Length: 244
Image 1 (cartoon, rainbow, N blue to C red):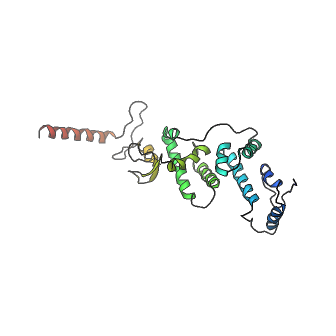
Image 2: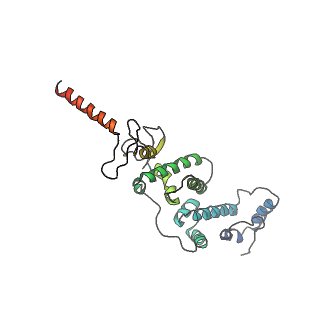
């Protein structure tokens, strides 16, 4: 099989060149590189250009921490091709394992839920741009890394967040306190977003007064003043009930 080297893409990653170095369509490749030399755009209907785009997305996903199974799912490339890319980029084979299929990991921490909602809002902003699923995930995850100082979601965990909604495990809700849209299971107690949950861990839910941190025991939900008023109200209600 003849070999053709690229003239117009000197910065193309070496690990992607095998998509373009060997081809049985030399006329199409020559036409594409000639258009590039003349400053024209790349024809979008050439199969080899589509393969190159998928290869670039695969490289970017691997560099962001994606495993081979996720790369195959997002780009449509074969396991053999992705395995070669992964080994070339990281120097080791892709670790085994399945993509997430439940929300158990996210529900164990409010910080994980907070970051999952942040990723979901980013997906909502970018899902209608017309880009491929791999490209949208790349942009979302890079934006997430820029926003957060200490990210807790891996690329694999971030990619599973919108699927939780499409699988009807999580639903879009409105927070009772800040009226912000968020996603969570319906069986969650109260419609409270992760931001307000974190806020009210140290604030009174009635008046917003700061609550002192307790190292042990049950977490307070109201300040001392509101707690006393609440107890007084219960006593008055009980007194009225007993005396008619």
